[in-house]
Length: 444
Image (cartoon, rainbow, N blue to C red):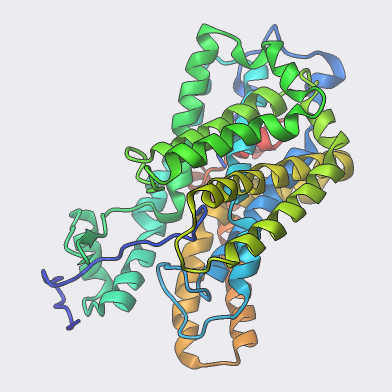
């Protein structure tokens, strides 16, 4: 493919994304204190209980997501930029995270909204929109463009300057094409999570105005016995069997049927089952009770799936085996989440403190900037041909430093805070972050 003019010639060919075979890649601080009290909310110590376990899960989940995106530079799956030196065996570890990493974040997002709704719904639609859409606008305008620029530089040998590219970017240029597939500009890349979470939040809050569906006693039956382990799994297995192949994941919000069905289901389960400080449906207790079984089954299912799928390699899988493998994939998607919830309740529910509160605020700026820092760092370091271990550690270190710098600036520059998903400070210098309840209710 020939070089491209600085203006961006018509011979540019775009990137067709090939996500890993099973599933690809926070909402934001909400001024809960500004919301009116809810007469249905739990009282006394329950209303003030801080769900530290949910905060920790969110911080850990985003930490894994950041490391996962560093790994994307070194595996064969298509990504924005790629290393000429792949790390053998890394993909086999990344597929352990692949089925459930984003599903867990959507479940946490639903739980967070449930905690906010306990304090009252008045003004929550607007606050939720502000906390999710402002970072999306800022991210698409400022944070994401360097990713798209380096992508066309690497894959299409684009010779224009970054300034030339920005002109095309904001003109919604669609000439970066390859094999009949064109890169849509502007793009949200890793920030696709934000518009999806906003949409689900709007639907759930509007539904709450018509019916208090998340507190219906029927949800308790889902948490009773062993149902928490297998009833959601049946739903996800059905979705994989009937919708996944017909509706591949696109992340374009409009034409993404299977992804919406999966992610919204996770969001609803999170809001209804885990979005109550008093655990009124018993889901937290059930996850804790079955944490060992969920963990053991998750490991067994992952190992069994890997061995079974490896038998066929690139060959066509018989229909009966394909149906069984899809059912196993649904278990790989749900069981690790139950295990994570159960172990978080067991080990992290009483581990609150200044470090967690700082991380709960900082993790959203981390999320917004991390992939851009990773892409720039990896693209810059790859030509130096450092020893591979040194290069990988350097990319991780630079990504961490970039995230810390973004969080530091966000917390000190008040006008920047809403654009990075953090509640602005009040006149007295104190943040409007929630004073009670889980911090996750503010930022996921």
